[in-house]
Length: 81
Image (tube, one colour):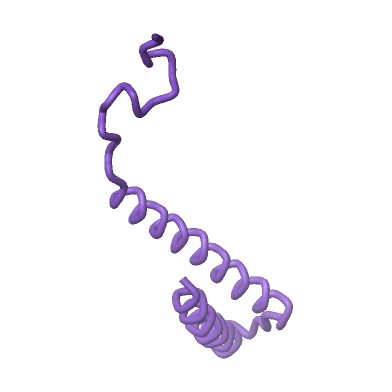
């Protein structure tokens, strides 16, 4: 997951700065560095959330079902006696 976050951070830095420069070149609107940093941070956090969710789903898919034996459980279906 570390690699996903670092790769996303680098890609976010490049994409946001290129987009800001293009907006300045074609539209004469300067986007302040504070807003660029906020955009990069937001993109990185969102990517980290999605990467974490994908990892959790992968782990859940690898889980094995319970054996199904009654004596393995602690619930109300366990025989007394």
